[in-house]
Amino acid sequence: MRRTETGWEVARIDPSPSWTAEALDDPECRRLMRTVEFGRLSFTRGALPVVQPVRFGIRHGEVVIPTRTGSKLARAVRGAVVAFEVDCLDELTGAGWTVSAVGPAHVLTDTDDVAAAAHLGLRTWIPLDHYSYVAVHIVLLRGYRVFPAPNGRTLSR
Image (cartoon, rainbow, N blue to C red; front, side, top):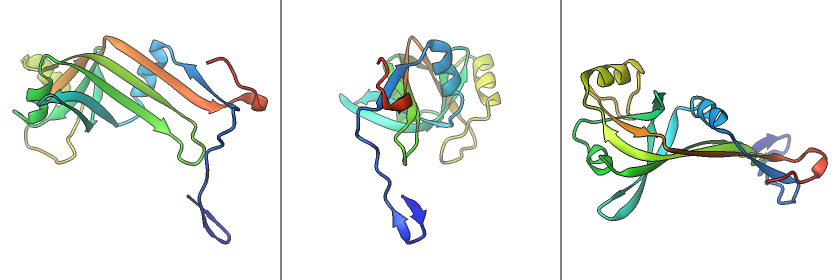
């Protein structure tokens, strides 16, 4: 929604074919991941899919997620292959980008790794006195950007 002189107006995404998507390379995906604070972790718990919003950081090719020691999240993802996604979309225009990472997750147990994760300054939504950290090793990384095509022409996808 946007404010106009006569009140609030709902902006609509142009459904015309003048939009295009471009694949992002690995360095651009990694750069974009560092520009946002929240992402979504997708995993399985009790044989059912779960998508959980999380705060995160990036360290040595891994997504690092703070959690409560012994949390259901930490127990559910330990050793599992999970997916992690971040994005930034403009609600008015529909332009934006998305990046997803897939890889095995583990709980950091090495004291040096835990100290390095703590140094990132990550916090859960509900602050805790003590944090554990889940790390997702990025094995597969994909991303794309969606934007209006120049001159209304659709570019290669």
